[in-house]
Length: 161
Image (tube, rainbow, N blue to C red; front, side, top):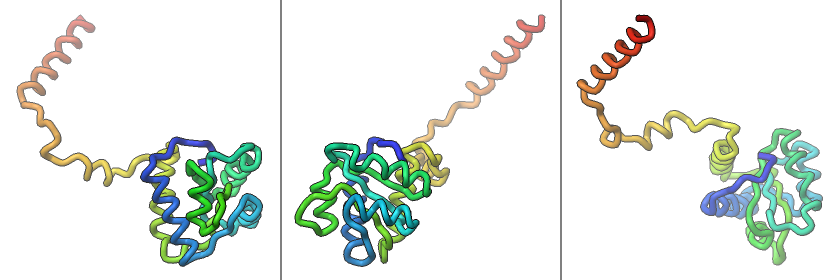
């Protein structure tokens, strides 16, 4: 999750909502310096970074540090939105969630979605099975299967004979 991956808008909105929930029911650290300190001390459970920070050098160390400490992090599009979610009157570059409070389950679901998006985790088999209903699966006729086996035999004969 250290690299910037394209996060869908709805997932970005869920992340901002998580920050709001953690602010009211848990514990967050606001700002680049506070977020960095909480990651270095292994206090952070999840880090959210604004993608529109200028200059980008201000926050470029955070994803690498999170990756090193195995703390999940994600980018949201705007620092104004991140600041508003954190309860600040101004934008902020980074937020570290130290304690999610009652939103811990929601946070783990978001982290799992981010892992799937980044390719670090395969899509769970249960999700695939639910997405594909039996009615949606086209059933191949038995004749087609028999023809395929005959074709294979012909190829095998042609190769060996």
